[in-house]
Image 1: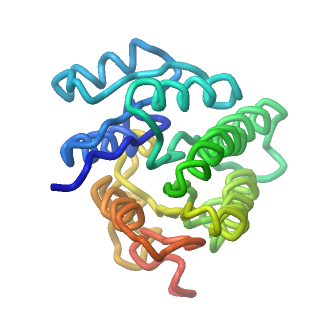
Image 2: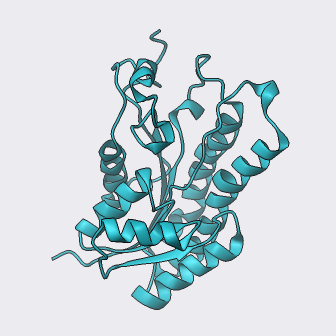
Image 3: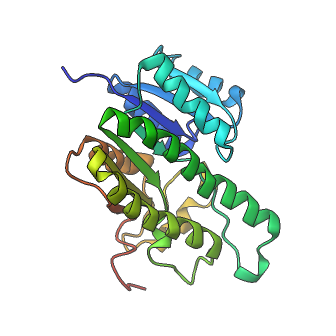
Amino acid sequence: MTQPRTVIVTGASSGLGFALTKAFLERGDNVIGNARSQARLDQAAARLGHPRHLLGVAGDIAQADTARRLIAAAVDTFGGVDILINNAGIFIPKPFTDYTEADVDTLVGTNLKGFFYPAQAAARVMAEQGHGHIIAITASIALQPDTRVPALLPVLVKGGLNQAVKGLALELAASGVQVNAVAPGIIDTPLHSGNVEGLGALSPSGRTGSPQDVVDAVLYLTDSRFVSGVILPVDGGSTAGTWH
């Protein structure tokens, strides 16, 4: 029987984070879920049937202290950290000249700091353990920008994260820690609520993906023993080349 692993999921209360939390719990793993508010974590736990292997830690993931509390909760409660899923993120598409200072601060806080601080805290524990997986949820549009979706800020930050994943994979390889990213295209989650049907045209497959498509990619990477530094698009072929 496979030994249960301890998994941290940021943005765990809805969308992809909720789907990932559910998937790991169904495998018998322990999950530390993060969201901004305890109320949202409690609602998610209720939807999941209040599993005893789920622990919610509320806080702004852009704050280093939140990352430290997540890692401490995992170590103190379950004895370590095997997997970190940096899922929390926001997407602000608009013409470049329309971005505001608030947009920059919000996106850099959640998407950049929300990766950096948890990954840094987890890397310290994982390197000492001699194993671990760090997974970043980025965006396929950062691999291949699209004129139909002006989104310079997400491309800037998520594109940087894609490269950071490669650099961190090299830096941590000797410690036994694997670092990868999943780069979703348009996925049917609350992030795209009310406009999913029209967004299917952004993929050559003509449809949007499901949260399970992303879950499957993450599970593949966290089950792997010899895959690191990979950016795995889950986008129906959108980044395969020019098609429209």
